[in-house]
Image 1 (cartoon, one colour):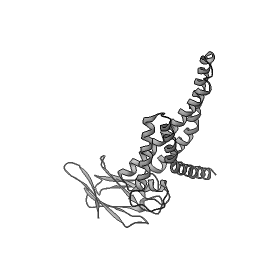
Image 2 (cartoon, helix red, strand yellow; image 1 turned 135 degrees about the horizontal axis):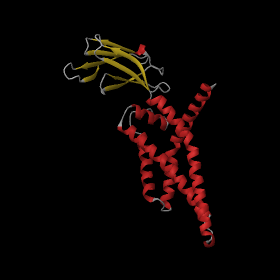
Image 3 (tube, helix red, strand yellow; image 1 turned 60 degrees about the horizontal axis):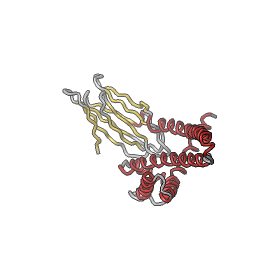
Length: 260
């Protein structure tokens, strides 16, 4: 039952997020143009207009299938990976926080104007405005905190959490290789593995496994002595990929190289 509720909540949040990303640039553009017309918050409004235009132009660039919605294009850009994809992601983050700030700003102005009706009651009205402002800020925090926490939890589960799937030691147990799965595959997208030895040097590679989670059956480590090994990545949706791992016996320097 809990798994069902969690799945409904997760896919519901994805649907809301997709719809929000779809309309966020247009809504932000309308608000920014309105503020420019009334000469309110001119600098940030002008920057928002440029950001919305950049997002529209950015979605039309790249080798993407025509007809995809913005969220699909954004995911394709990020999976590329490309500087454009990460720039679009930062642009959406800026628009999100700008939109929330604009909403709070306009509501605050509405509350302030509503309670500015007489000089005789100025102090009393200001106190009401402050109380309303605190209530409004508190309401915004309560409204968005569950969404942020929920999104953060699943972002950690599906993009950041590392799961050890293979740990292999050299013949004389001098060196070792650890292979982790980073996050979880989304829909039918690729999984990501991270291979590392003793040091901080590592390599990340995508593994196309038709949306299934990875296991030890997807990674094969073959040692050629204690200082050299070949890592073979296997997936249902790809050809086998080989990675050469070498350690210098003198310096202990570790290197990874993808073999084509």
